[in-house]
Length: 338
Image (cartoon, rainbow, N blue to C red; front, side):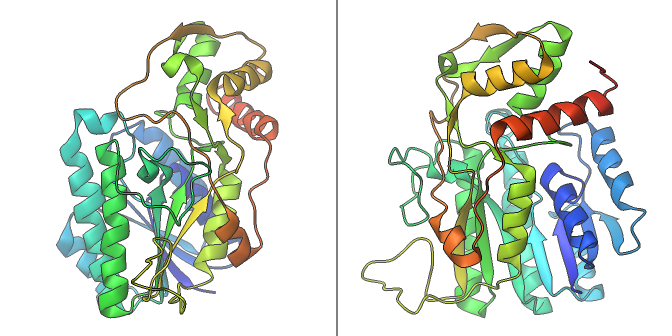
């Protein structure tokens, strides 16, 4: 049993992760600020699923509140910190950029400092496939350079990777960053396209489809994401003895620092995703085709060879099964029977 801090515990991935950690016997302290970026009642409903477990406790706090985070780390001995809390959303970063600086930069700084002074044995944090930005060579590999983000959200996630490396180098803090690829599934985020598509299709409203539907995404089912996180979390980052400053590998380091992709390794065109959703809902979508939006990229595709080599795990949930699970949950949670 480990004492684990999970930030963003009321969030989509954080909720599922806490469930898995508790099921295997870990003691979990969840932290979340329960902000209003999307429906707070959904976050509270997730927490209501976790609270009955005797191994779970919860603190409502904002990571940008440095004194609050310092008090938390000084009062609780954590062996492992899994940092998922962040201001999410590419498009929202065009409207409210300061929220990303406060949460994703200042908040992550608080976590790094807390881990450093508390002697945490491993910090795992969520990065994003969005860091690949203008890269056009696919599949996206952790060995590629990612210096050309096309959204502020992506830039903050790239900054997180750089900040984490500096702490691994300066203080020998084992740190692992996980680049997550388009996560979907039950209890998902209402701001995600598949969630809003489902609601609109059931209500007979048109859905906006950007880039004329030619977007491709490496849709990854949430259970696969959580399995990848846990397997990596159980393996503290180590230095790469073959790392060379003459030919620096972006995915590893001379310090205890690693980067991994977690994706399904099977990109799907958005129109195919919508067709699968229509099939599960038994209803055809009204489609409003639009050009590409600022900050979006045409395709994502994860190279997961490093993840598989380290853990023996490759995400494998089919799109059909994943969408079926999501639709069943959506109908039940929102009382939308067939």
